[in-house]
Image 1: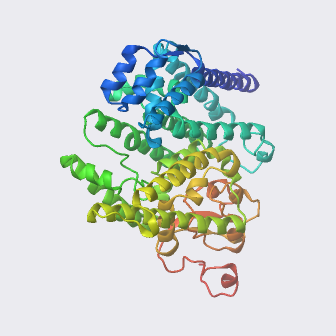
Image 2 (image 1 turned 90 degrees about the vertical axis):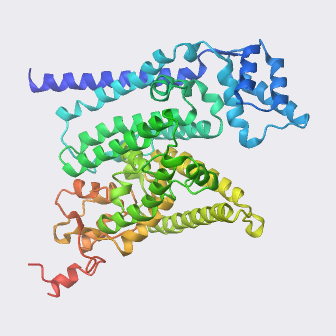
Length: 524
């Protein structure tokens, strides 16, 4: 087969993969409208007996909907919410913080046909077909493209440079998070897609967080293949991508789910405080401390990881060991978010906002944690200026845990780059950044004499660092925000940049071209 014919063949394979992915995406979207909704007397009784809904007035109101069939979930949820209002008028309100599980349970109990009766089939038509299509789309690049990335043509890409495809994709990301976090009862059919895996791992149907964890893991693993193909010439990136995939699949997903199946306490074993802002909440500490050996082991693991392991390793090798090798947020950013890394704002204004915002979130996290721990140890409500600790925790969870980390952190990939959360909001990144800036042995060294000012390094810096500015001056790059992904060094055509660990002395840009030219530095 000639080279041209072979290239055409692989191009067609790639196109076929894209078509399969689009079919899977279409089925995934259509799944929301599959089936109908009808409450039966038995379903209402089971909701009450299971303890899922303990509000008897609400259950009684639901009996008015018994036998009524709905073709659309929006209409059904509207009537269910009306019944909740009616129950509230009787003096038995459905508390706002419980509405999501209440309504989700009702919608799930009423679902008929569609996804609920064909869960395995629809799972394979979405997750299975989407994965196959993605791999067929990516794999031909092993034979048809050269490894590496260059600053060529990204401004003309509708997907990668805020074109209509990017806007649609970003809007879809944002919409997904809004519904999953705040209105899960509208996406019950999506949650049901995870049932085959949930039943296999823990012997019970999926909830929204299992579904999200499964989808998150699929995205990391599949897009890791794409990333590895791009950087297959770099051992550093191949190992780093394998590490991200391993920790997401094992520590964040499989191990916690298997622990839950064994009916012992579980958690994401790689998630350290304050990124895991719920770890030191009073109820979690109490739950773990009262759960026997496994609970105490997890409590001690979380404390050791947060206050010993994470900062100690950052002092030796920088924040990259966690942010670019282990962290799930970083894992999704490096894989699913990689096509958007060039969209990060490199301006001085953005840097100033970043420093104030990320450290402000860190202060918020410390105050929130301190307040709830004060309650736990003293058994006295902590209420400075009238703000009770549970309210501080609630606002932190809503503003930072949901809106910033989820809706903005991932939804804004196609608008502001793939590290919006890591750069502007992650409190753990702020702590690691302080260690890296003042105490770490990590730095990116530069050879300014070789820099040709092509701009590749700055273009592809996901953390908004103007790497070229440092390279042109031969200065070490020691920035608190740098996650050590190493992409800047890989896209440099002259080998100007190098990731290194070395002694603290001489790392904070004491070495410059001026010093070398004056003979003050021996470069022999």
